[in-house]
Amino acid sequence: MPRGSAKKKTEDTSHQSLESKLWATADKLRGHLDAADYKHVVLGLIFLKYISDRFDQRHAEILAEGDGADPEDRDEYTAEGVFWVPASARWHVVQAAAKQTDIGKRIDEAMTEIERENPHLKNILPKGYARPTLDQRRLGELVDLIGTIGLGTAEHQARDTLGRVYEYFLGRFASAEGKRGGEFYTPASVVRTLVTMLAPYKGRIYDPCCGSGGMFVQSEKFIEAHGGKVGDISVYGEESNPNTWKLALMNLAIRGIEADLGPEAADTFHKDLHPDLRADYILANPPFNISDWGGDLLRDDKRWQYGIPPTGNANFAWVQHMVHHLAPYGIAGFVLANGSMSSNTSGEGEIRKNLIEADLVDCMVAMPGQLFYSTPIPVCLWFLAKNRDDGRGMAGKELFERSGEVLFIDARNMGFMADRTHRELSDEDIQKIADTYHNWRGDGDGEYEDIPGFCKAASLDEIRKNGHVLTPGRYVGAAAKDDDDEPFEEKMDRLTKELSAQLAEGRRLEEEMRKNFRVLGYEL
Image (cartoon, rainbow, N blue to C red; front, side, top):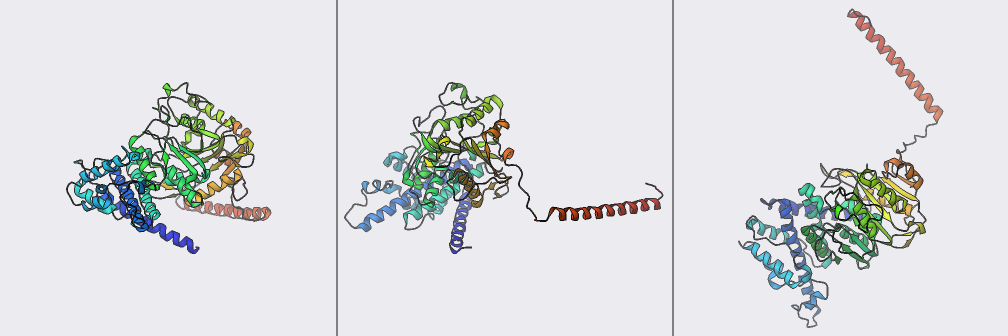
């Protein structure tokens, strides 16, 4: 293993140890609160710690500059994109009162003051730390625990540590909440697969059901890892659950990502907060198979260009909403339940056919089961691209002509069991899927070729013959068995001799059995 890889592995192990230790300790302090309630208690404190740390670092920078600037001048902070934290709301003041019986009341007051001084945070930060169901002694212990996170002098170090802990806790809370957890959290390996395949470097990124903002965080990580600038992207999102919308805003603020998630939580179908947006990249994990989406009120909606989606299932409403919001050379990658690839009920098959015939379907990936906290069922990834017929895509990059063809990838056998119930895709799995896609698109580092059992570039004629079904297993075939290089004649001679010997042994055993039965007085 290269020296750098060994160092990274050690750092990753150290990070995991810190995060798992923090989780174990914080979980012990939960008391009688459900994970759904405790989530907001913990994540709110992590956010408070982050903005206070960043404020303190900027405070130290102002003093070090020595140019007479006032370290209590609000403009010195807001000009640098730092939240202004009132003196009584700073972390060291809060933590100093951790052993007090009114610590919850002090935290509520700190959150209220911060919202008052920072209009962007109005009605976003969690409150209710003083409620009777929250044990104040345990709350104080939690404050002391979170006080150990993000220590360091470098701003990016504190931000990265706190951001990583926030993201880790989101995942653990999703696991603890089970099905409810799936409403705000998409597993990291699924998000990384989408992001690595779409490779969003520049332009507008949109998630119409953004949950806690994981798609945006992973996009930022991807850009930074590949030497790009986060400022080259614009982030737009929408989320219907008010609490999840707040989680997303805090998550993005910790990562330093400026995003337009609208002025409030809202239902994407019935109150589209970005009606005129045409995005270069769309990443999404819509809720699976929802039946109560109010489709009966939207029968004549202009978004249904490829067919009116059934009122009993929103899958193809989500698909068409995303197509509607794509820029002329935009591309969308999203998660759907496997039924979307083959269902013909309530007009879904006709909508899928129309999407295919409009040459919008770029790639289909069948994923393994047990990836999600909310459901054990396997899912698929859809990739749609506009204007594939002129060899451009990915926000206008020049690519080869791939019109009239769809790439199918069968990744059902990939991944590993991270624990007893959940599977994850490894970095190697994700890279293999993404490399296959990019090589087929013509912007990868290698040449594309069909691999039996894994990937196949199928023509529209092939898809028509399969009734416009998009299940990868129908196209990729069976994996080729390893060739042992033994010449056919020699192999047949060897196998014939082995079969002859086995038949002879069978006759011998049969005669032995007959003899034994004769001894007992029976004849076969």
